Length: 281
Image 1: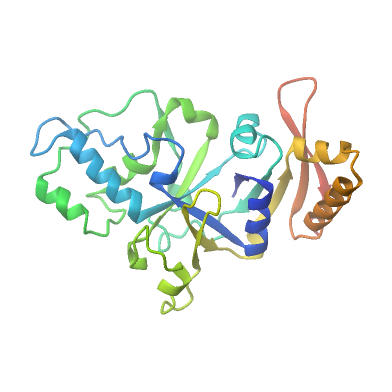
Image 2 (image 1 turned 90 degrees about the vertical axis):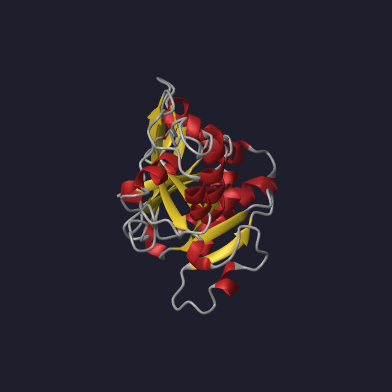
């Protein structure tokens, strides 16, 4: 199955050249309600607010999220995550990329479909005791029956307003890496003794956030879509240097091992369409 990642042009080049996908921690996502839908009851040793904050803090620093989507031609997704239609969408074969591995991921792609709801859950989970709240700070939670509900509430529920994203998530536990969210060491150093590690740690140069990069095989990238504005603006530029840059960029994508598409608006409706520019042989 192919799922899609909306990114800027520069990020797309980094993904394709580096053959890796960046995972982001919960606290660095763009929705402040992430990790707050536990549905704790009001009866217990601590308040639902305190319990929610404790659980969210644990999940924020000990797990990383890769967000994918099912649709490469979603106009809102292009506007919000595809650099206002000037970016790129990358189609990834999740099986070839090993994103379906239950050994590698605490929530693999086949279990990571987001559920969109109009209201938060209430009285779904018993309020944890203080001892349980302290225990969760130290434990390596696994996707098993006693905490399955917590993991689902933390990562797989969002407000109905976000439904247009059609999001599918892959969740990685960072606890085995033996380093903190703010640890300055590169992940490659932390994992230097781990044979065959497929992970690297980078820092987002723009936002200063850590990115946990999972290496994937080259043939896992199956499709690439150029944004409608990216392609149109480069073609219509009167600057010779812009046209040369456009040709260089297009030639770079054409020689890669994936199908290349160009997006454009359907002028008879409100949908985007995609035209095949280069077929992978």
